[in-house]
Image 1: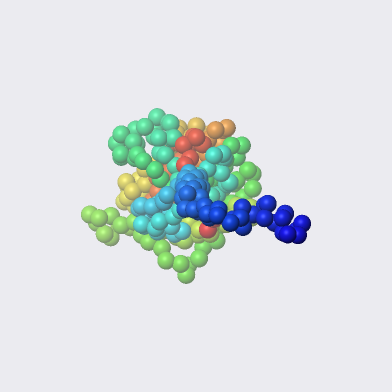
Image 2 (image 1 turned 120 degrees about the horizontal axis):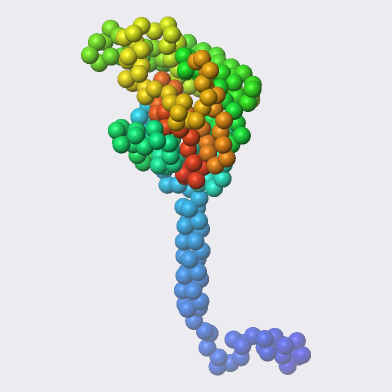
Length: 258
């Protein structure tokens, strides 16, 4: 027997006559169990960071998100980026006005809105047109797109009374997104149209936002720990304009970028 063969036989017990091959079944079982545990850990981690689904209800996020759309969202643990759409717990509106709306309008549960202001932002808003005017002292630019589909608010008891909505691109700095807004300012509406708007849209509350009012202009300063939320459908959407600022701790998840 050569020296080389002796070394090989010493390190390979199965090469020795009379030694039976050990079963690999127990090792295979352990491999399967370990693989299952790793898969379960990965799934639970992904499930934690990915909120299962966010289902859009109502028309408040038109024209960008339609009724019954389903979206997978990512959990948020800090202040989200400006202008991202977030899912949140409505109990995070802690103003007295919000509590009244929860009691009278049953505004409860989870909702989706766009983050229009984070701590440190200063925003001016027109009570007459319903549009943002400035964002951190920079003018907000609007451009109408008549080719896009819009809708009208119509009085169910008197269909001859209606208020139109206009499709606009709202541009703030380098960020642009689409919204629906009133086609005419409130100062140009008839009394019947004003009544329809006030019945359809809960009036803006400067008190809920702790905002300062000068004429028809409202100035909002977003404090630490809060965000300002708005519906993309500014004509028919309940948000910070009526319920106040939302606590960041009440944010659940953020939608993927559009």
